[in-house]
Image 1 (cartoon, rainbow, N blue to C red):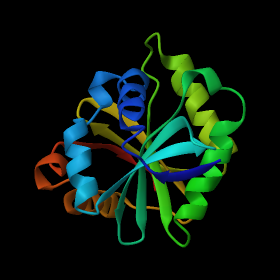
Image 2: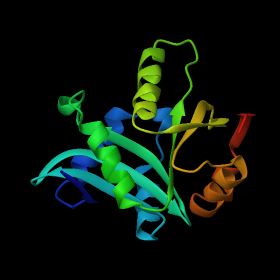
Image 3: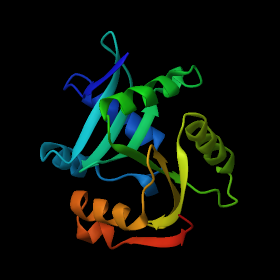
Length: 178
């Protein structure tokens, strides 16, 4: 199994998994990410196992920071340890960089069990809590990091440089215990 730039053969598989795996409120327009990838600010990667599409990883890169923006394994392959293997591949792909992600904060809704399990998955796989909680387009999120810590100022600068000032201006700090 390995990560590679998404092939034209699997771009529709990747797009379908993206649409089914992430709530609409959390999805960036697909064309936006393709545009950022063409400019070298994002990578749209497929999880490949001997030519078979097994999932997606979409990252954004700036200086020594890498945001794992989206990460999903094909539904039929979940709960088989693939996620942990892929996290290892992500960290190998970006050596000497601070890899981080945003996860939803439980809010008392019917999806809290998934949110709690997702956080546990990342923490079991060496992620650390930064103490930074944000409102990302109306969705309360917590920032987790692999490796050295990350400050809120670094996070906002990352968004300004990669996603643009208009998007960065829509992020609100909820709490910073870093």
